[in-house]
Structure formats: C-alpha cells, structure tokens
Image (tube, rainbow over all chains, first blue to last red):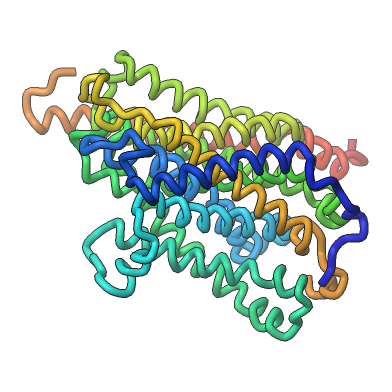
Amino acid sequence: MSTPANNGPKSAFSTFNLVAGAIIIVGLIITVIRFTQGIGSVTNLDNNNPWGIWIGFDLLCGVALAAGGYTTSAACYIFGLKRFHSAVRPAILTAFLGYALVVFALQYDLGRPWRLPYPIFYQQGTTSLLFEVGLCVMLYLTVLFIEFTPAMFEWLGWKKVRKVVVKLTLALTIFGVVLSTLHQSSLGALYTIAPSKLHPLWYSPYMPLYFFVSSIAAGMSMVIFEGTLSHKKMHHMMDEEYLKHHDGVVLGFGKATSLVLFGYFFIKMIGLAYDNNWHYLTSGYGLLYMTEMLGFVALPCFLYAVGVRDKNLGLIKKAAIITVLGIVFNRFNVSLIAFNYHLPSSERYFPSMMEIGISVFVVTIGVVVFRFITTRMPIFFEHPDYKSDH
Amino acid sequence: MEAHNLQEYYTFTKGIVYLFMGGALVGVTLFWQFLMGGKAKRDENKKTYGNHH
C-alpha cells in the first residue's frame, strides 16, 4: 500500500478531530433517539410538512452538489478535455461520498433500513417518480463506486483488477451521465405534483429542466469550491501534475459555469413569462425570488465571466461559493420556504435542533471520510506505479 | 395585463417569450464575446500578431 512520504505523524487531538468527534457523538445520540423513539421525537414534521430539512438539504442539495462527478468525467472522457483529468478523481470521490450520504441520510426519514431494497427488488412502483429517483440513485451510486475503485486498487496494489475497471471508464461515464440526467430532473419533477402547494414563482412545468441545468452549475462550482478547500488543507498530498493543472481547471470550469448560469437565468425568465407570474414579483415572495435570481444566479454568472476574462482565480472562487450557496437557497425555497406558502405561520415548518444536528452529523461524516481517503489513496496525486497509464 | 379569453392570454405570454428569445439571441452572442475576450485572449493575439505591427 502506498502512502505519501510527507504524511508525517500528527496528534490525534487536533482541533478538527475534536470538533468532528464531538459532532459525531451528538449525532450518534440523536440517531439512537430517532430509531428507538420514532421520527416524531426528533423532528418538527407533520401531515402538512412530511418532508423537512432531511429531504430539502441532505437529499436535494446533496444530489445537486454531487453533480461534479458526472460533469467532470463527461468533460474529460466524453468531450475529450484531458486538461481536466486531474480534477476527475476528487470530483468522483466527492460525488460518491455525496450520494452515499444521501442514501445514509434517507434512512433517518424512512426509519427502516432493512427495507431499503424493497422498492427496487421486491415491490416496484414503476409509475412513481420516486421509484425512478431511487433506481437511478442506486445505479449511479454503484457506477460512482466502480469509477472510484481504480484509486482504491492502486492503494491496495491490485493491478489486474484495476486494469479491468479502467477499461470500463468510458462506458461508466456515459452510463453515469444518462443516470444523472434522469434523476436530477426527476427530483424537480417530484414537485410538479404539488401545484397548489408550491408558490407560483417556483412552481413551473419546467422544474425538471431547472433542476437539471442548475445541477450542472452546482456540480462544477462544487468542484472549484472543494478543490480550493483541498488546496488549502490537503496541499501536502498533491503532486506537481495536480498543482500544475489546478489553475487551468478553475478557469475552465469558471467559464463553463458562467455560460450555464447565463442559460439558466434565461430559461427561468422564460418560465416566468409563460406562466405570466410577473405580478408576484412585487410581493414578499417576489423579493425572495429576486434575491435568488439576481444575487445567486446573475451575480455569480457575472463574477465568473469577469474572473475568467481577467484570469482572476480569487474572483472565480468567490463566484463558486455564491453559486453553491445559491443552489442550497434554491432547493430550500422549493422544498421548504415556498412550499405550503398558503399555510398560516403557526403551521409552517421549521426544523428542530435535532434535525439540524443530524444534517451537520451527515456532512461531518462526509468530511471525515473524504479526509481519510485523500490522505491514503492516490486522489490528488498519481500513484508512481501507474504514471505511464495517463 | 388583463386577459379576457385564452387567446388573449396566450398572445400576451407568448409575445413576451418571443421578445425574450430575441433578447437571448443577442444576449448570448454578446455574453460569449465578453467571456471569450479578456486578458488571455489579448495576450494570445499579441503573441500571434505582435510581429506584424
């Protein structure tokens, strides 16, 4: 097994470990309460609001932000943009962990983990969008795991198995793009079933398209954001090849995201025009909508464009943070804030501290596992035995 | 806008959408030029055509 030579011994009681440890302990306590006392003991969910922050954040945001996996691998292997190759492994790992945690977090909502395979293998609901989402997520998680395994096999020194999996790269990438297109849009389509519950500014028959297009921008922004964080914290794990391509990846992804956000802004405006919802813009929800569209779509689009023109990496990274926050804001608006907008404030949903605690717990697990893998496996560096393969 | 029948409604909404599409054609072209220009492009042009001036 290979580990980089500069990964020296470190104290187990670092600030990161202490904070992460405390969050995980609290998360485990809430987990015990949830699975022994029932969902009502830890959440503010009710019949009006059966889907809360665990769906709005853990699932909708998690899936959108994990879209960096299919966008990066499609750019590299389908569109032949080999200069993005160094970003593929971190993006695939982020996507794999993102989807794995989506499935993990879903268990808190569903409550009976042993029934997880039922909708796929035992009792299919083939007319349900949720069935399609479940099937796609299951298949895509498997695809992401297989796409991730070459790094694991290089670490384990399993050369023959690795060789077989590497040959599947293009097929897996195509399969991954198809599956992502399907389930990213299906998550938006889920909300088309509730035209009377979702505010007209967010409700649109084009929601599947909105969810899919915004996931591309979110995924690419997440690659930039995650790359920036890793650059700061995991710099010692990166080889020259990765560092050499880092700026090019940021510039290239910034350019692409700017174009996608520009297109997204236009299709949102066209949806608004088709449904003739202009009069809602002067209401309170209109202000929220304008904040989302101008502050979290138009602004990062412009910042990305200026950053790319001036080769200003700092500006591109700021735009990436705004876009990531924007996608969270949008998914919260659709699933929580603008959902059930007609209910009196006393009946509106606000997550309990324990619900928020579980979401923080899930994110922390993701960061810890990401850190564990990247400090051991060749994610940010090329394994010396396989350098000639690329 | 007050529509008295479905035809008036669609004439209005589709009219606005056509205006948007026209704006998009111009907007995307201008945005593409803005995005593809800048420092890098200027440096590249200088490298390519620098000796001819």
